[in-house]
Length: 196
Image (cartoon, rainbow, N blue to C red; front, top):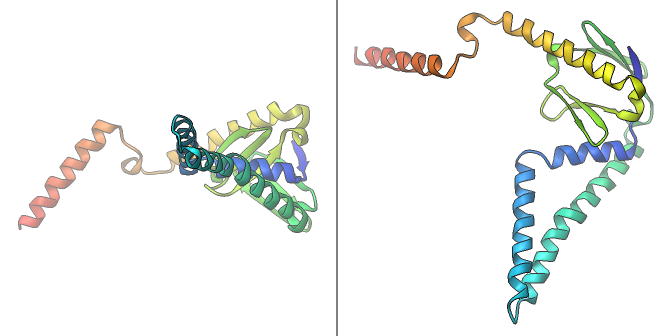
């Protein structure tokens, strides 16, 4: 299966939003929105609560309007200035991985290098690390989107199975009880060695 993508500013913006508002940043944003709402509500009932109301509005505006606006401006700048986004990238889904072609350069991303695959705001994100991802907009994948996603997920799953099979049994992840037992046994052995 072959397809190509040429990311636009809106695609880069959506990916940046997904990255920016995930993990710890998402928790911080929710907390700060709560603080802003609390300041507004707390300020309404007090005679001199205008300061609290203004502070609450500023905090909410910072996280809901200003930060996304800054992310969009940065995405637009990247789309214009970064040469990677000026030309289409061609992808071929193969049994050994995804063959990627960008201009004169090409490489194969093996399935076992894929960290995870998710869908967010019309984008399929194929992570090869915590901060690196291939971005496939739905409009570029077209009608074959589901077929391609199933193909990718199937090969990622197979690659993970092969990777686990190649790990020696004693290094594979143990169940909670077995791991706890092994840790206790290891500690006892270490204590005995330290006594001698």
